[in-house]
Amino acid sequence: MKPDRTLAAVLAEDVLVLDGGLSNQLEAQGCDLSDALWSARLLADAPEQIEAAHAAYARAGAQVLITSSYQATFEGFARRGIDRAEAARLLARSVELARAAGERSGREIWVAASVGPYGAMLADGSEYRGRYGLSTAALERFHRPRIEVLAEARPDVLALETVPDADEAEALLRAVEGCGVPVWLSYTIDGRRTRAGQDLADAFGLAAGLDQVVAVGVNCCAPADAGPAAEIAAAVTGKPVVVYPNSGERWDAEARAWRGDATFAPATTEAWRTAGARLIGGCCRVGPPAVASLAATLTS
Image 1 (cartoon, rainbow, N blue to C red):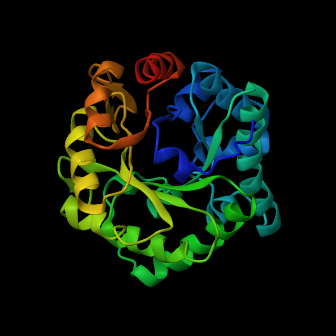
Image 2: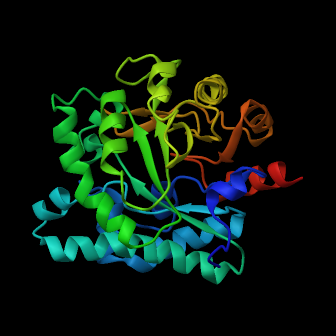
């Protein structure tokens, strides 16, 4: 059900469980995501599958559902012949589907509208590199229209997520000004640096004095990098921390397959909470069973 409390109020007192990877759950449901729009294609073609994926995470114990708008952009939809009005409707639908799944759960569920990086629209892996060759002003112009539409759909928070580059983070933080919705800022990282190679303390510092930012942290990274990053985020900003790493497996772009073993272990998340994490979940390849185990660990 729609919560009566703001996310910021809850984070001041408690820890919330995030969901896991939406794409892996959609694939488990039999969906084909081999498309430049990735899961965003299903907003038009099979919205019931997206709602079912959200519902699976809600049943597993997730208290925050992240929408399917990560790769949903006006530009990406336009390449598929979808006009601007319909694209806006699909963006709003992403929030509606998560909200519907939350309300049917009968529990208090918050909805985070995903705002993915510019590189996600390119669909070429550049969200893990950053450094697109665009100015901060150009990136702000790209992000603002989508942010405005998502904000109008009234999510509980905007998730500025998988951000590889502090310059893009600056653009995103400018783009959300005045939208009327709180945000969290989450970098994808390699060790103690952004994917673009910037010092993580400096990158987190961009959000330190901004009241609109209710949490800062990392996602779509190795689980081993999450704890140290959480400590840096808390020390630099004094804000609640958001942490949702990948399973620990590695994506082989040439073979288009995942390699290695999963290292995401819910039992280790207590260290993240000690470091200041208040929003804890999983990203790529972390499914409902892992989220259920995480929820049991964090609520015990």
